[in-house]
Image 1 (cartoon, one colour):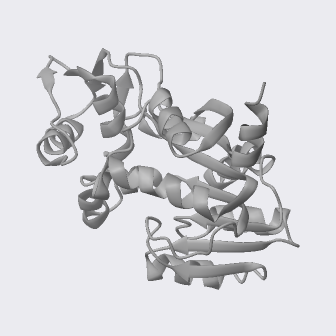
Image 2 (cartoon, helix red, strand yellow):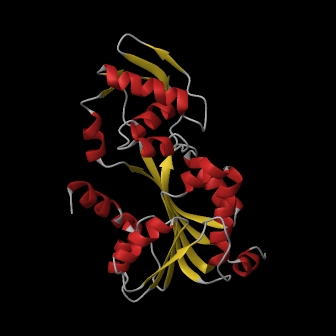
Image 3 (tube, one colour):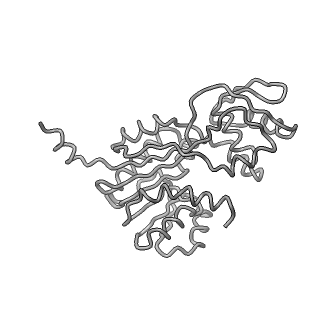
Length: 268
């Protein structure tokens, strides 16, 4: 396991401690990195990994995780009976829902998770966190990076990227700055084109909390998580960051509200 994978695994320890064992589902499981951690930590639990990509699910199958069941489906589809799971997770998957399907489908994903959880079941969300608006500057250290930025500004589809050119870089909103940083070293042309369809930074902390509460969850914990330092070290040869790093994730730990208990609690 390389350094980056080790850091990712360490980063997930803060997630695992909130999981209720029993029946667990990860919505948008990808190639199964989180499933592998869950399988090792909860060997007696039944764990479902759901993703729309059959190629990613093949990678899950190749890991030979004995207590994991892969299912091909879209995470905005309601395919499970009500009150099935003790824990549900969205780890790095909601930004894709927002990018391709819009904000209302994010709400649908929360509603579906609420429906399939048992009373007092736990929903854990980890995803990108949009920083508060402010103007920042990126110093682009070579011509190739400058060309890469101009291509990003031209091809990024989720929103218009507004910027001002400077002698050695660009001035722009911090959300667009960290969006570019997260994408500029896409390893292939195919990966670049996919990234141009996706925004990582779509909800601020309050937006996540509002959607959670509107869909029937009680917020147990809401925490800002820093991105791993290894990721930042990779960009230093190409881009100088002139502002404090705000490349953040959010971790929400939500509990399914029990209607009967609420009614009892409201009595004088």
